[in-house]
Length: 327
Ligand code: PBG
Ligand code: ZN
Image (cartoon, rainbow, N blue to C red; front, side, top):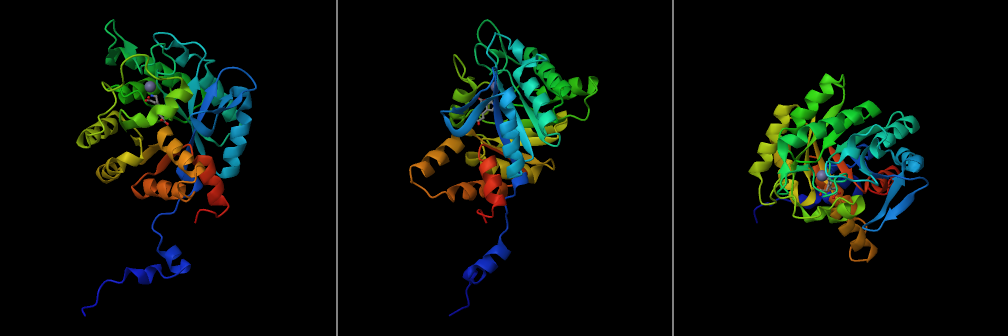
């Protein structure tokens, strides 16, 4: 018989398997999404995201400490204001929830890398990611100055990076210009470059009270059927001055992520979104799959090329990796 490929030789025992492992998760791969609400003394579990909490600013010490213990170096903040209006005016207030949270976290953990999600849907009464005209259409160019103003207000509060998730055209350029003109040329921008109109955002919208009150987001977020279009979006973000690119959601779009890492030299992030988290959490809780499905899934995101994984699993991942449980 002709000799054949014997792949099993390099899988024979734990030692060789460990030596041959191509992708190793590390705590510093992860960024934790944090939801901040108004009020005091609040740490309330989010029903759509088991194990995730709404925090009021005064309670952020709890999450700062957990990140520190788990070796998680960065977080991305989402604000949930009490008051919404048609143009999301709370989003850029100096004492808005996110701006306060940035200052508080900076004080609690000077080394923490703080990212601010820039969008309007949590702040608008209609729940869309921009300004509307009378027909209920999301206006692109009219939205840009609002986004820029939000980004500058985060920068004034001391954010390290802003991540606009609104999917307006030209938003990276608008934000870059505004930051630079205000003296914040050191604040980085991560483009939510290929952000798809996805049902996987369901649990987040419940958590952030940001579901659109009418219609959907298909006129600004991408069609899940499209891969080449994602490359055009990434190209635009590169040209407009983004420091990092992102693909979102992660799991159903690993092909897009991989293609992006091959075509562009900027570091890529993947957002392992709320629905992806909730699905696995529930499946493990119900005994349908063993817990190892979590590191398996997160490893796949890294294997596809993500330099940064934004995930609700961040704390759990950091802890397990530090304890040597996910090897
Ligand atoms: C808002 C925003 C969304 C997410 C991040 N920023 C929801 C949306 O676009 O409707 C989703 C995150 C997640 O599902 O975890 N622009
Ligand atoms: Zn939005």
